[in-house]
Image (cartoon, rainbow, N blue to C red; front, side):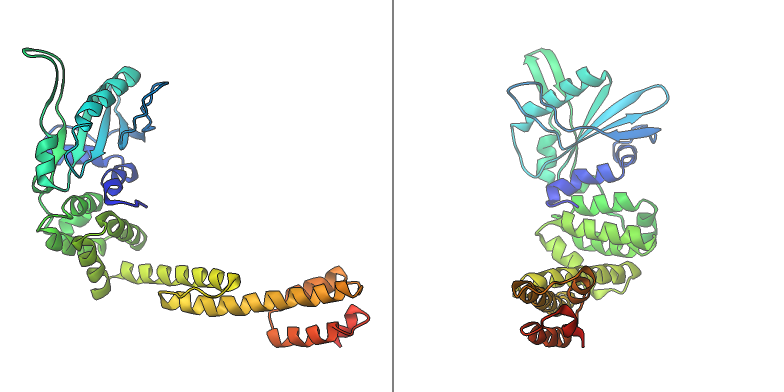
Length: 320
């Protein structure tokens, strides 16, 4: 799951490695057929020493008679250092894999997309040694999908469109269509993409819009997300309860889990005390009795055994 919007924009191409060919066919109007196979490459482009350079995502696509690498970069602001490193990425990958390279730059801000699309010219005036032409996409280059049926036909592209337009005025309508489109696909995939979308929108107005949509509608995948969060809250709460039972939970699941955790923690602690008292007093605790004591979750029963352990001469006296 992406931790930042920057990561979501390029990581989605790792989740669906054929998305890059569909994207270029749709928006660059280039004949890029779906690859026979596609592999996410190691993004470490470091050569021995001393420079360390990582591209965001690099995908090697193969067809029957050719191969091609797409370098996918997520760019949120102007950064002239990138205009130095991008040619390096291309030269390095071209030398290593001996195939064509296309640089795709994804920009939630249209002005950044315009900056990124400027050709990078290396060489003398009138004598170019290297020309890099990034294919940059901004919100205006990827029109929002306005029909849930159309969006559901390529749901990953619909998610990508929503993430790219998270800063745009069209974000509200785009997210509304995406929420409806997710209800047209299988629940498990819809649930995963809904969570991915929330993370990819980052701390933005669009993220709050998405959360409001998730709370206001009654789509099937939303119910599954809510159930998952509740189970997660229960698990977290139980763990907190066993440790100290002191943390304040956010959700109903965490509250229930903490209560259960406290009870389990108290029972485990009291059972251990019973065994410890017996052993300190020199009373032999056989394996079966130890298992019975430590496996007990009835705190009232454990309290009785604890009192008896103070004076018992044999472990069997606890169970009479």
